[in-house]
Image 1: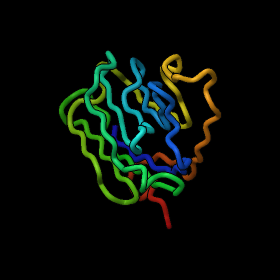
Image 2: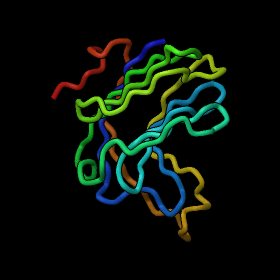
Image 3: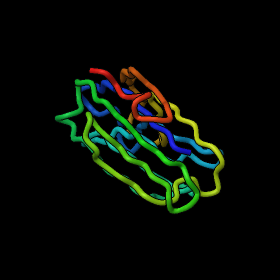
Image 4: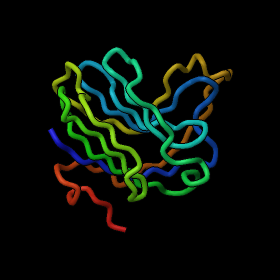
Length: 154
C-alpha cells in the first residue's frame, strides 16, 4: 500500500534524549515489529529503521540541532509498504527530500500503523535518578493516499 504522512513538530532547545536511553517522536509499527522511527538524537532529528528482529537497516540524523531546535519542523513521509523490492520510504524535511530508502520494509508483516508522541526506550539507561519531564509539540498530523491530501499549506 502507498501512503503519505505529514506533520509538524516543535522540539525544545535541548535534545530530549537522556543518557543512553532512546527518544522517539513517532513510529511506524507493523503487526510483527516496530519498523521505522522518527528519533531525537543528541545532534538533531533523524530516523531509525529496523527489521523485524530489531537489527538496523538504517539510521541517520536528517537535520542538525541548529536547524530543528525551538522552531517548527515539517516532516513529510512517502511510503510504499511492501514485502518485496518495490518498497519505498522517502523523507522530506521542511519541503526538501533528505532521504530515500528502497527495498522491502514489511518483512513478514500485513499492516502498518503510525503513532506519534514522545516514547522513551531503554529508560534504565537514562543515567538519571528520575526521567525528567519532556515536552514536544505536534500539529497538522495527516495520512492520505496522495501528497495533495496531506500537503501542509503555509
